[in-house]
Image 1: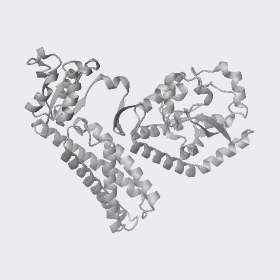
Image 2: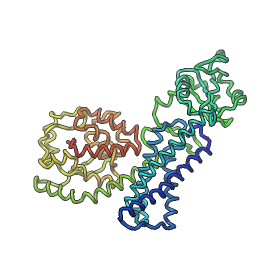
Image 3: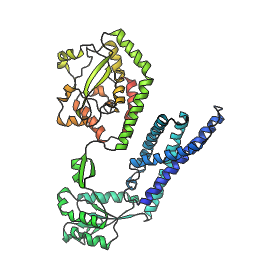
Image 4: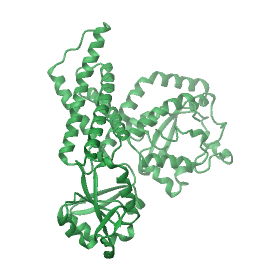
Amino acid sequence: MLWRPSYHRRIVQLGDFVTTAASFVMSYLIWNWFRIMTNIGLPIQVEREDIWKIIIFSSIWVFVFNEQKAYSYLRFTSLQKEIQIVAKTTIIGVLIFFASFFFFRFKYTPRSYIVVFAIISFFMLCMEKILLFHVAKIIRRKGKNTKKILIIGTGQKAKEFVITVKDNMDWGLDIIGHLAADKSRVGTSVYGHEIIGCYSDIEDILHAHHIDEVIICASTKNFNQIQGILDCCEREGVQLRIYSDFIGKIVKKVRLDQIHGLQIISFLSTPDNEFQLYLKRLMDILISGILLVVLFPLFSIIALAIKLTSKGPLFYQWNVVGLNKQPFKSWKFRTMVPNADELKEKLIDQNEMKGPVFKIKDDPRITKIGIFLRKFSLDELPQLWSVLKGDMSIVGPRPAGPNELNRYESWHRRKLSIKPGITCLWQVSGRNMIKNFDDWVKLDLQYIENWSLGLDLKILIKTIPAIFKGTGQ
């Protein structure tokens, strides 16, 4: 949580740990009570190893909260955002719960208990966050748990920051004043606060006032004037933060790396949260593995239907380009005549898609069974094998064909900076209605820029009705 002392973080982490542990216990009591009342079976006895599981998984819940930065910006977080983090943590935690039982062969735990626990833990954690949110608001409005901050700058960025702080008094930020570039402005007021010095006075100001944070709200053109402020805050050990248009003009994600003593600033254009990416891969393995087993009878039926209705192979080998333009082979159920690629050259003038992708309505190359398979996206199912192998993900941009890549514009290629997927925003946004490839890519880039596990889950949930509606093709 920005501007939150470490002991406050520890309190919240302890609260999350205790609430999660209590959720395990309460879920057990409710689940056993229901079994007894409905005569479903005898209650399950608690063993010593179950207590250790509760301690371990409650700690994992806190770790997942931490990975979502739940303990790094709470002072600025709305209650709605808190609830969203709780929902994501519950989903991720339950996935880890399932995966742990699968990999470590723990004692059998009924799935009904896990469902009850997921519901109970979500509501109990929500209640905890609501309580802490309102307690913190009351304390800060009484002038306690506040942070004294000094604003560097008097321009538009400083104005925006001051207005935002005034609109959110429960953040508990106390602005003691501004530093200006022009010494003649010292003693005047700006945006309701006094200008208490100029940039060169920073050391004297830090010595004369108790300041918790220094906030640089300067435009890019003034950055050469504040090097002394950066050096002084480092010497004095004062927390410094920057609100500027400089970073925003370059990229949305920035990381400072220490490489053999060198301070390197990395500008990131793709997701880099290793823990969440690991969970995404774990989710891909679990979902693709389970679906390949569960849907095997459906695979057999589709294979038989293809063989009985048209000549040719069962699968269409799809040579595509994936992450970082690496080629790989994937497969779909064949929905077209065997010489479809050759016939494509004769139909190229009928292409209804603006851009490198070929698409026409009522494509004569599609077989009768192929129309049905495409309508409900059943032809995509063999790609689950590519997901299991790691070439693809369940959710991600559409893979690019080698011939398509040659026709990509420069900005199109950014979609190849992450693994391609079976479904994405284009799948749940009426892909059959999109006629311009640029619009398709914009949806892929929107996904990349806003990626999170929560977004993946949201897309997966929306994909299910999209499939049943038959909006494929």
